[in-house]
Image (cartoon, rainbow, N blue to C red):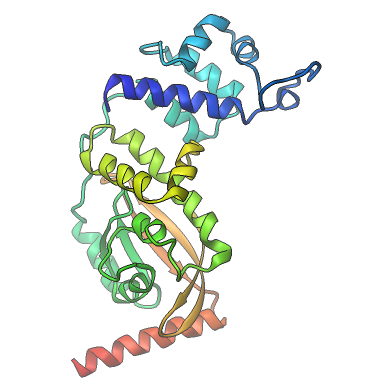
Length: 281
């Protein structure tokens, strides 16, 4: 990521977070007409203990590298989450040099773990949701999510066709969470050409992705809920846990259903179907 682009991202992020905070949130009076939603620039500057001119230059992408003290004050003033704070510091040019490119080699121990997970779908993903490895049940489930079935990237699978197999009630929640996570990835890998190519492709191909991306939400995913319509077994109502493998910046994604529930029985039906196909092969 070139310096100009990093400054612009910082400026846009600050504007988006400022618009999210109301005067009441920070115990300021809301007297008088306000032309914009959220706090005024001078209010943010006053609360953070910096000059209004300096803060204005931050939002105009005219400051090279604000200090850690200033960024910490802004994070506190704007009520940023831990993930948002980390993103703010990265866009401010602090936190050292991240890895240049993503690691797509899965550790042998993780591959062995996948082989032993037979009762729940599981994938290993890189930070752009590229599927690096799956157990058989995970392959069977991801084949239902992917459009076309050969697609191996979870973000494309969600956005390129607004995946018809994701339950309509869940689509936007899943999509927004994925975009927020991908924005955090883009901050960690400012020089990875694959990350920027994926974001550019999705911005051009998906108006919904472009809309969610413009919200500047940042949050690293950890757990959530999926409901998908599997072509072989029907509706699967699943919880997932995303375990972060920090040494390679990969994720082990595990799906589960409540034991005894219809979704659990359907997962078992899918597992039995896979076993039968393996015997015939």
